[in-house]
Image (tube, one colour):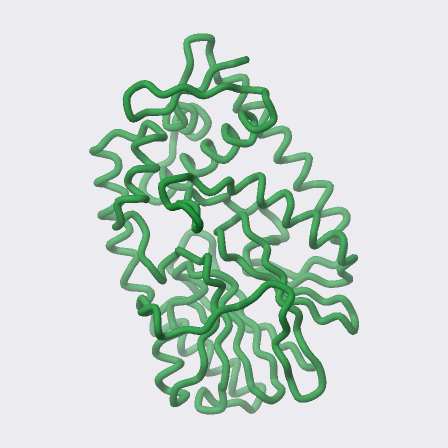
Length: 317
């Protein structure tokens, strides 16, 4: 099975995104890049070098539904004459829209984010929407954990690796333990555990960081020899990365706990103390990071949480 990495430019701070062509029948593209002229041009060139045309693509598989990974899915599907689009049913990224639905706004209010900031985040994401087209419920098929994507001479096993988003998925080629991990594994930085409604009960918050730690451990149990991430270079030593990630997460959690005074604090206040210089999209990412670490600390008995009106207040136990 031939896996061809293709790097595409994005308009986002993260830089280029990696998509992966499986150059074997049925021709499959894992992630698509954002909906920009620059990205589609780079993708066409990458496909051309592999002697593949967009019309040859039969499957479009999404690791998750953020704009830099799913933006071209609809246009590629249409150009390829109805290629199948697959994404995990828990995925609630651009497929359903972010910060538009009441569940998302409620989570930000619970985190203590002021209404003016929530409105600013919503308007910012309206600008981001131009880089992807949403899908209706009947326009994609599901990815099921532990099922397989079959190819002419092999298969990729679907590994549900929630954390960065609820529906994030990785893909394992068991013959040589190669993994395509999307944003679950990034060589130089730790992925952001995005603030998301729980896919089972949207009134609740998805425990992103706790789930992410489980996903990392699950990937570790596979003893991967090579991991292709959503951004940056491939990872050849997953054990080193796992150790580095785990240490960084625990160090950040200790930093977060130190910011909790006896009188209590909201996740928004912690995020502003952690990342005082952030603006635009980074403020949403900052509050996501703060909520994730506060939730993990609370689940481990290191913090308690109470409600002050609609706002959650974290306290030391």
